[in-house]
Structure formats: C-alpha cells, structure tokens
Image (cartoon, rainbow, N blue to C red):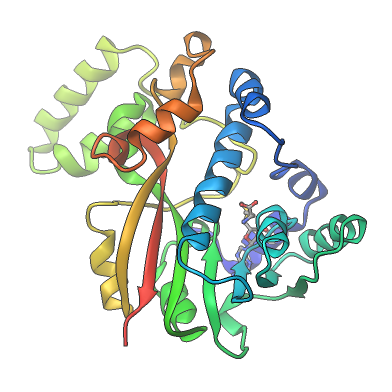
Length: 291
Ligand SMILES: C[S@@+](CC[C@H](N)C(=O)[O-])C[C@H]1O[C@@H](n2cnc3c(N)ncnc32)[C@H](O)[C@@H]1O
C-alpha cells in the first residue's frame, strides 16, 4: 500500500494537478453532457454537490471549515462563497500553488496551507471535510482520530470512501476478488478455484482490471458502508448519515451502452437507498464528534 511520500509525489505531478476536478459547470444540462462523455467528471461534480449539501444542512454561515486534501480547491471555494470561513490543506505544494492561482482570479478569502493532515494543528474547526483522500492509505483509523482532534465538540466530519460492496456488481476483477477473498473464502482451495474458473469462463472480461481512472497508479482502500459506522464510533464519532455516490446503473465495463442515462435522476433515486449501497462506487459519511 502507498506510503505518505508516494501519495505526495503522485499528487505533485503536473498531470494530476491539471487533470483533477475541473470547474463545476453551472447547470444540470452541462453535467449531463459530461455524463455522455466523461463519467469520472460528471460523478465528481455530483459528489461535490452532495458534500456541499451535507455541510450546508449542518452549519451556520461563518462557521470554520477545513478541507483536508483540498486539491486545487474547487469544493472549498464553493463553500467559501457561501459565507464559511474556509481553510484548504493539501500535502501537495503543486496543488496548493494551483489553488492559490485559481482563487486569485476570484478571491474568496480562503487560507491555503501545504502539509500532511497528520501533523496539522489549529484551533478547532466546526467541520472537517475530506473528499477522495483517506482511501489512499491502508489504515484509515489514524486519519479519523486526527480529524476528530481537529473538531470542536459536536463538530461535523464529511468524508468520502470507496465502496467495497460495489465490487459485487462491478463485473470486473474486483468482483472476482470479492468472491475469492470474502464470499468463497470458506471453500477448500480446489473448489474455490473451480468456481472462480467457471465464473471467469461464463462472463468474459471478468478479469478486466478495475477501470482506469485519472489516479489509477495508486492503490486505494475500499470500505464497507454497512460496517464503517463501527469504525467511526471507535474513533469517537457518531454517524448521522451515509449517502451513496458515483452511482452506476450499469457496471463500468459496459461503457459502450450506458450513454444518455440521467445521472441526476439515478443519484436522487438511489443515494439514500439500500440499492445505492451496492450501486455506488463511493459513499460519503456525515458524522459528528461525540464527547
Ligand atoms: C484525489 S485528490 C482529491 C482532491 C480534492 N479533494 C477533490 O476531490 O478534488 C487527493 C488529494 O489529497 C491530498 N492528500 C493525500 N494525502 C494527504 C495528507 N496526508 N494530508 C493532506 N493532503 C493529502 C493529495 O495531495 C491530493 O491533492
């Protein structure tokens, strides 16, 4: 699994700085256009909205927000424009440099900091958010514990995770891995291999690698949304909601036939349903520091 230095070096590369995120388009039609051409981006815009809604539902304007791993700062800039006192922290100097340049064109009073969240120290924040950050580490517990110490009593954490349950419906190497290491783990090795061989033969492409994404070079850890609450409780949080995101009506492998789906409709329908816990390749946890 990645070490902190590997993650930092990865996100210092110009390709990842320029490639990541992008400007959120104004209307739903623009996001639907992305859904026809660039699903990663359409999902990213929707996730940005979901996180913003979860924060806005819990905080008064003027509250102090820290975004951990803010990247080039699109999400935190949107929150700053809504009247929150925002800090963007990232371990990558290149990301923060780009964030400062973006903000110079449209100042919103954000404090930008370069550094590892693990060594960050500051007066307590009312909310800490982390979108697509802690999945790069095998052990997520130290991050949750650190985020708790950065929060005021009853402070809010909004954190995205990759969804391990999605592997069941992804119909790719992740599915085979889920069957091998979870569902069929109890079988004797010979029988397990027989079942997996049969599966690979019946569904060609089942061994295709998990779909490429802009940052596929790093390993990512997936969590189980049905059990993740216990981890949050252990780290001193109470979980208020879990929202499914990046909802795939069809497995990513079937890219060719999935054009034209209404990503808004699908997200609205499934983000808070049990189906969403399987169809979303990611999920967002909304939690509060419990004292
Ligand atoms: C996939 S990017 C996500 C960026 C942004 N949150 C977004 O959704 O657009 C992950 C970011 O987390 C940052 N990061 C990773 N580990 C970190 C750490 N330990 N402390 C602070 N930032 C970190 C990386 O440099 C990178 O910019």
